[in-house]
Amino acid sequence: MSKTKKLKIKNVLKKIFNKSKKLSKKLSKKTKNKSGFKKCEFFCKNDYLVEMNKVFKKSGEKWNVPYNPTKQDNEFIYNNCKKTFCNENCEGYDFYGDKKKQEEFKKKIKNNFQNTYTQDKINKLKEKGVLSGCVNVIDYDPFHN
Image (cartoon, rainbow, N blue to C red):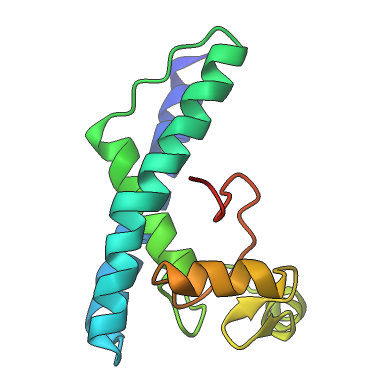
C-alpha cells in the first residue's frame, strides 16, 4: 500500500474517532436523565468494553492475530457504546445527506430501541442501565455471565 493511501486511511480513521468523541461529550451535556446516563456510562465502561475486548481477543486468536487494545481503541469502543446505548434520541448517525436512509433509520426505532431487538434483550439491557439501542450490536450478548 502506498504512503498516500495509508495517510488517507489514517486521516479518515482520525475523523471518525474525533466525531465519536465529540458526540460522546455532547451526549453527556445534553442528557436530561443524568443518573440514568451515569448508569449507562458505567455499563459501557464495566460491561460492554470488557465484553467487546473479549470478543475481539477471541476472534484475533481464531485468525492467529494478537489483539492488544490501545488506550485509543478502548476510548473509541467506549464512545461508540455511548452513541449506541446511552443516546435516547439516537442522534449522531451520519447518512451523508441521504434523507431517505435517515428516515428509514428513524422509523426502525421504537421506544429508543431498534425494532430488531427482542423484548427479552431490551429488558436485559435496561436492567444493566442501558437507555437506548440505536443499532443492533450483534457481537455483544447481554445475557453473558
